[in-house]
Length: 401
Image (tube, rainbow, N blue to C red; front, side, top):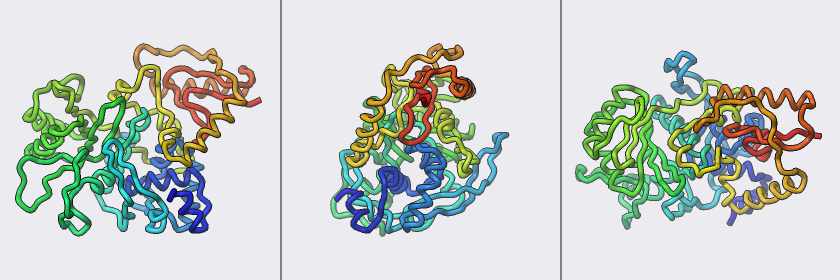
């Protein structure tokens, strides 16, 4: 039974965006509003409106919590944030989950009964932030909740299941204490350009022995692994641990890579914005700022940035909606022309966020002054621009008649 059929059976009117938002919240457990907006390629105003509607229908609930974020000076400070999660009723309306890359299907995921506190909450939300950077370049994502529920041999009461589950994303440690779980779950998984990556977030400094066991467990599997690190001491510990598993070298500032390219230790991409809950938060500009060097390198040639709105099109109801939207857009829009935009440094890299925003402001002002005839214009590589989750395509400006 599809998600839409189940919703109608319960007398609810949910659109495609609602279903995708609920599937995302179920997969990650809980998320900040800007993460929902960026994941689905939605505007902040639409996200706030639809999440409020889900809450009114008893399908989602928000929590006001404190999260440690970086201020404008780079210092870690506690900030009040809002976190959204599904209720038991909301989770019950969703169908089975197809776990990315593992060929496993979960019949369901339980709802989050209570949020963690302190560093655990911060770590989980920062992990979602880094998965956003992979998704922005077109990667398919497996969350830690999906990985653990589909592969770990312990059930909710920490009892062994009858039969061992096949391991795809989970790493298996070589030596463990009897009675303890021998597996290690990464903070998420990403599949891009036929390569799969285990994504790890390190906000604390763990002992070298612990990190070495986790790295070795994942290195025995089929995936590459990438460790995002904040602290210098944690980076040194991870490099020492990884070097004990396989040889490697420093390839860039604060970046270590194994010789087989299967283990990376890189700087953190950040903990997320401090104003992600505000109505004025610019989700499109924030998505454009998520520059991920490795994901960009893996993206197929000629593709600058993935269209986030298309990532869930494998879902039948969303695919049909997207097909209708594309057909209607093709019927009323000619082939985009190249806009006469100011020059920037295209080299082999994308323009900086400041250059992209300056270009966007310039193009918008020119369109308002009537410099461009009505139509669609290509703004150039790396310019992320969209008006809404089903609005204009990335890198294009549409001028209304």
